[in-house]
Length: 278
Image: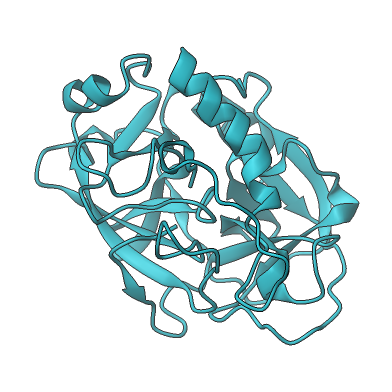
């Protein structure tokens, strides 16, 4: 459990590093490369309006612009509800968090942003030492007008978990492991599915059925992408199968990204019991 525990410690600490931009000073020493927790590597700029359900979680005490305040990704799943990772919000109060919607570019210009979060629901069985059940739901104070949402797949996801399948991941995480700046434009990347047997060779403590593994050398999510969606196109709709959770390093050979699986029993039950819809 040693490596898993160390990754979990970083999950709690990495958000303090994320707000740095190229103009921020002084510089902060990056964590060791093998301890980085969800950046999109190997991706490209998304088109404006391509992923209208993407949400930037903003820690309001961190800076004076959306770019500096960005901490994690999230997904608008109904006008009043946002899906993200538990490790993104388990240490923050509703009044100190905002869910910024309809963003493509994170503005670097100073601007005030107030909290629009009514409540944060972290999975009751979330384990910060292993990042099992790394899922949370955020309820907004008011529904997003004319919301464009993504679907969530809470059962029968096995048809998508096959060799050769690729998933789409989006986020504002850093695009270079050696960089200390987040991009301003939303990034998107196609990550290949990694079967459990292969993934468990990299992560022997991984619990079967609780996660989806995806990524390859040079293609991965990473620091700043936590909480964002792992998704496919299903019946003409973007459909979320998991949330960006953790990984050992980013885009390294033999070390795929790990995503909290929404269809696993405890996670599915939590979402169904908590999410009231609109």
